[in-house]
Image (tube, rainbow, N blue to C red):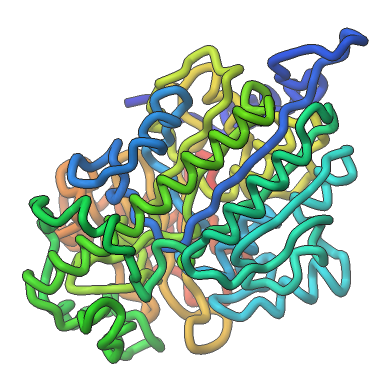
Length: 477
Ligand SMILES: [Ca+2]
């Protein structure tokens, strides 16, 4: 475990990332001797929980992601800016939290206004296009036509099997065989989002497998605000009404242990299918001769509750919802096979890609380049990471938010109740330690981080209760 870093270290980290701007971390050189800029392929899945990947869970079969992780770098503690589709995608594309870019929950209109109509914010594809990259998009947008935010080729595809999406991706790459111009390809898969429809051959993979149920499984969620997935003060649990998402199995509570096992089996089968498609995409990259010079990133837009705390869906501040699988593969890495424990944010992808491409990183982003972790996976990037889920079913300022340090997570719920979890002792978040007197100093410190973060993103929600803490800022995203 790395020591937490100070604001000074944080700023120096940013400078280190900045230094890399002037010298693209290319793995090869063009005939002119100029550094060759890497191609970039991002595979963004939909609702993939961080525990449902082979390198984190022996019950899940993902040989391709496992290999990419072994040959690349796995970010074990990756958190999304917000655990809900449209807002999370807008955060990835703009490098900002939802309350800053304006796409709240499932309503992408703020993104449309700020990025597409006004041009007040620039999306990562627009900046890479300006830097000379060919850009392509396939799969789920949720934010209007991708051409409007910097992707010159491709577009939204509604195929739930992702077959068309990966076919487009493979064609896009094949067309760039022997073409030295760098490209940026965004592959937005729809799996493993419900409804689950695993083909029989993928379900067969798990037919006789034992499917362990997580320690925090419940048939129904407790009636505390931290579990609420609806409007403030409600006890609303999403997908509770859905009864046919897989062979008649509900995707929300209440669900028996037997139902969760069968639902999880189908979920894993869909994850394995997606993993297979990713393997085919890697094959296409190798066949086209671009693999050796491609930065490949896998992550998901949010996690998923497989009965954890009695819930389905996401939206909460629990680990199952805000933490996602994330890895970066690049044959140019010197420290391949490392697993970084640094707190990273989905917001870091934007500056990281620009950094690795040798393009200027704009001011005002909330993330920082992860490039320093590629050289030194044991270091830290920041003191705490934040996530929010505001506006579900309503306007700004609602919902839950969290800040998470190496050891602790502080959650401020929609009705201003507090939770404090010791992630080292209690990774399944079963015991709320906010009222424990011995944790008073920790609580005050994390309240201070929360206040700092809320001020920065312009959160209109009430600030944390209680007296102010002396805030020793450590940098965040
Ligand atoms: Ca999603």
